Structure formats: structure tokens, C-alpha cells
Image (cartoon, rainbow, N blue to C red; front, side):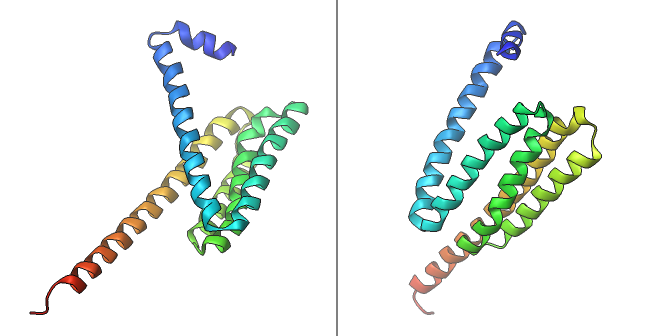
Length: 161
């Protein structure tokens, strides 16, 4: 809360604070939409989703209790990475294995190779890069698949010449 009070006093600080709130709300809506879609797809997803969203707050609370808040980001990234392994099986999407492995390895590397002061910030940067690249790969493949389906449908609908 103190950080937000400092932020509000800076030029455009109010815009940054409200912008962050707007982004968080947008991501929350996106999570709800994805959650509903995933629940429809697989009953196993419900279990995996609940385990992840229980494990994350537990890890945050425990790390706060032992005054090790610098390790919250790698803990969350590890939990997310580990939950991708069973999701890869559920959704038959092998890229989740790659993303999960990279997240777990990056989390371990950031804890063991970075100074304590840099673990949260550089750890978050690496985690976001892994997730961004994974999302870009997935979206690119989905666009290719959609284009292929569209082309096949167009070819099937066109008269033979």
C-alpha cells in the first residue's frame, strides 16, 4: 500500500496505478473465460486448477511467515510449471511439457544463481519471457491450424475444374 502511495505522487502515477488495476481486472475476466472453457473440456482440469490455486497462496503465506518474500516469484513459477505437466497429458499438448520444464529450471536457476535482491525482479522477467514465448508459439500454431482448416474447407467447397 505504501508503494502505491509513493506511486500516486509521481507524474502520471495515478494513471499507472489505475492502469494496473484495469489490467488486473482484464486478466481476471480472461481467467474466468478460460476457466469456464477448460471446465467444459476436461473434468481433470478442475482438480489441476484447484491444486494450483491452493498451492500458490499457501506458498506465498509460508514464504511470508519465514520472511523469505524474495522467493515468492520463483515459488509461483515452479507451481505453474509443475501444473503444466499433467495439463500436457489432459490436453494432449506437448508444448506444455517444454514450458513447464523451462519454468521449473528458470525458477531453480534464479534462486541459486542470482543475488537475493535480484531473484524476484529478474526471476519475474525470465518467467514472463518464457510464458510470452510459449503463448506466441501456441498462437502461431493455432493460426496455422485454423488457416489450414479454412483452406481445406474452401477446397472441398469449390467445384472441380
